[in-house]
Length: 427
Ligand code: AOS
Ligand code: ZN
Ligand code: ZN
Ligand code: ZN
Image (spheres, helix red, strand yellow):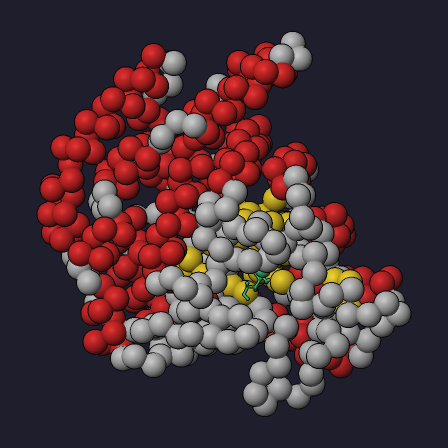
């Protein structure tokens, strides 16, 4: 299944005049405030969000998994799925692999397939939170932090192997998320667990190619429910500082304790030049991995306000950070869900670009709380969807990605090709 350019163009033709009216109206309104709609559209056109290979199939919970139909059965089919997304929105130009859920056999055919769909390989992820078939030692009581040096060694070697897979495909970063921790008080020596983890990470760090980075992801709890070795951004930053300049902190939006001020964390990490990027998702309770923007769109906007500011201050382009979705789908078609997530990210970014930084700074300096709040809320309450649509249209994508996906009956095509009971690897 491939979506052809003429199908996108034809569908766009039928939507263009309505879209164009909306765009021109918004462009005029923004113009009156001294904002150039076309500059924002340009930034949006350049923004790319990586798709995780594990989000292309139905996820599931520990209570069960209700599989969807036509899900990808192989790495090739996962790449094809991301190709469909990218054809529709032109904003999902890379895929992130999780090893060993994805095992690239011969690299060249995989690279050729990705290139033909205009896709690159984002960060590669290691997995020491599960035991694999034929694995010698168990990670039941941890991996990089384990009390037994032999288990640590096995986990280090796995990470180094993941780097090699990534190198073959042209990835430039390794993402590490550890589930290491403890379930009961007394179970673990916090300091030893930290030090073991640091030593293990140092060995992995030493194996990084020159132009590579390692992203250290933190998470407050789950699957361990008493302590987690890398529990928060402070611990993650501490590891990164001890490791060196190739290590940066990865923020997964769902990995915080309730009500954490994530935008402030982001600002601080950017101030220190240690933000690697994001795993975008949304949540109401914990690491719910829901569609981006589904629960707390204002928070997402406030995060983007800091991101836009931080990138400007550091004079770094958006594509020097790792933007990725980390979501799970239990009740929706994963591809439709991912299209919604990418759109939510572009909307939040567009809104953040509307903020008049000078006026905001002035209001802050004058302690004009009301005005400062208003500046942000005015931006958030602007319907920027015409800007997002224009950016996607100019890049060759669809004015209505989900509409076209349904119109073309993509899922049904995939069902015919791949069958009903497909089990994607990974959760
Ligand atoms: C786990 O909670 C994390 O978000 C990781 O990023 C993990 O590697 C990924 O979600 C796949 O399970
Ligand atoms: Zn994550
Ligand atoms: Zn998450
Ligand atoms: Zn997570």
